[in-house]
Every structure is written in C-alpha cells, then in structure tokens.
Image (cartoon, rainbow, N blue to C red):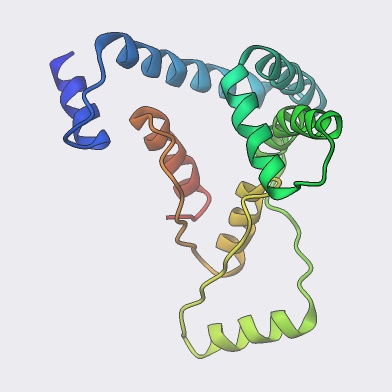
Length: 182
C-alpha cells in the first residue's frame, strides 16, 4: 500500500496526497474499466453499444456533478441554446460517448478521405522527412482517428490530459502504444 501511495503522490504532484478511500476508489475504477473492456471485446458491436449507452444513461442520471459541468460547458459554447435543448444535448453526449467507446473497441481505424490538397501537403512533408503536426478536436471517436494517423504515417505522438488515475493512464498509454501512438 505504501508503494502505491508513493506512486500516486509522484503522479499527482507533491501537494496531492490522496487518502486511502480515494486510492481505493481509483483502483476500483481502474479494475472496473479493465473488466468492462474485457467484456466489451467479447460482445458483438451492437451488444457493446447497447451496454455502453445504458451505462451512459445511468451516468447521466447519477453523476450530477459531471452533468452540471457538461451543461455549463455547452452553455458557454452555445449560449443561445434553450435550457431544455441544452439538457437534451448533454444527455445525448453521455449516450453517444457509449457508442463511440463501442466503436473504439470493435472497429479498426477510421477510414479518412482527406481533401486532395491536404493529402498532397501531408505527403510532401512526409517525403521531405519533415515532422508533421496535426491538430484535431477531441470530438467523436478520436482514438480511431489517431490509429488511422499512426498507421498512415508510421507512428504518431499524442498529447492528452491525464485521467487523474495513474492505473487508467498507464493502461490507456499501453492501448495507444499498441496502435502506434506514443
């Protein structure tokens, strides 16, 4: 336990020392994520999507704080949206996350058809040996887009925020590494 606390403190920074309960919750969440991923991989895509949409709906109903944060962000991004439409959009975000996750588990990389001018610029940069910087939105099933980019351009460096759980973070890094993303 002391080693786990030391790792957590090193990952979280010198001022963050999570208590035993927080540490146990983070480990339990990691164990749940791994178990869910194993189950999802064995289900057909439609079954995985149905399960995850159900979990997204449950999360929307139970995770009041996350729902409020999402609603506040939507209100800032779309200030003219009525409260009722904002509520429907936020609820749909929770369920669509489940569909996207099912696609990430079951589908291969996205098939991306770049505009000819963009493809020509990227291929010219690749032929010259120049590094490429590709900025994308964290929108939709971006893990699949990253996998496509990694396959197409022989590797990809990804910059992401930490999920604030070093076990989940390490597992996600390993999953991305297997798809050619660093």
